[in-house]
Image (cartoon, rainbow, N blue to C red; front, side):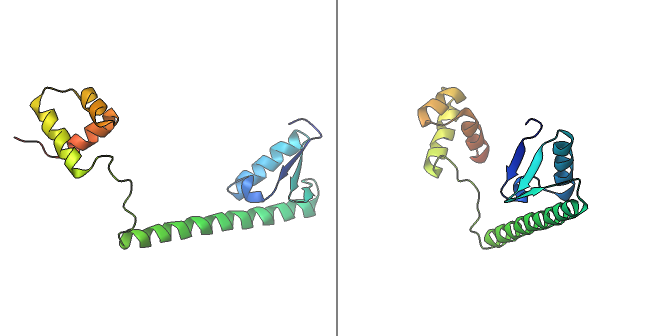
Length: 136
C-alpha cells in the first residue's frame, strides 16, 4: 500500500486475532500514511476518541474469537465422548489391510509395488503395516 491509500476491513477480526496485533498493524499503517477503514468508518489513530474506539472494537473482536474457539473445543469434546468424532478413516478396508500384510510378508513385493497394486501412497502402506500384525 502507498501513502494516502485506505485499507478497508469489513470486520476487525479479519485484520488481527488479538488487541496487541491490531494495535501493531494500525500503528504500522499510520507510519506509512495509510488510512484504515473498519466497516463504513475510517479509523483515525491520531484522534484520542478514534484510538479508544479502535481498542474497544479490537477487544470485542478478540473476545468473540476466543468464545468461538472455546465453543469449538467443547463441541469436539462432547462429540468425542459420544464416539462421533473418530478422525480420518483408513484408506484400506480390514480385508485389504490383511491381504496387504500377507503379500508383504512373502517378501516378493516392495512397499512401492504394494502402493501401486492397492492404489495408495507409500506412507499409507507403512501405516497399514504398522497397524496390522505380521506373521511370526
